[in-house]
Image (cartoon, rainbow, N blue to C red; front, side, top):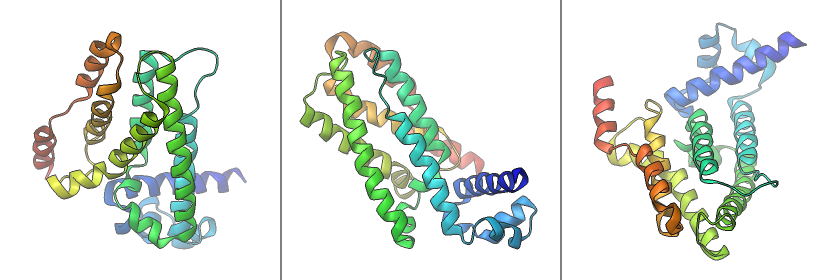
Length: 226
């Protein structure tokens, strides 16, 4: 039983690695089996299709994101919490970056996944709005519930389209440089800039500056690796 579970986990880990590096559309179950040194039949014993692998990886991503949006109830949020939230968000997105490189294709190929993603998106927007309101209650941000919802929608648009923007406008491969997502987090902080309370503006500006990566640096790094 343990061996079967281990093989299943190894398949998921190998698939995630290959999807992130090469793009989900460019990886087949045969590629995954070959990469692992197992037979295709062994892989099919655990997953009947690549769609099942994608669905399970998405479930893991969803679980991590929903844990991310859990707000501590015992004490108000601090600026250090904001930095921690951004670091955790960057880590989750980097681990599952293939999902944002061909999301429309993934959802079109699997109606059940598409429905699950729509429900997940609604929960994510509600969770993001709740976090912004918690930072407002702590005095770090100054915004109304409507502004918190609007900001959450804008952040969602940036996150879901950022890697595609880098690919189409700069010809960058999103899977090769973690700083590409770091710059995306910087863009989120830029969206929040007008809502930061005066007492926290300098500290938030310092946090934002630490995350800034010039796009030309990303282009230069991509060119050096080609």
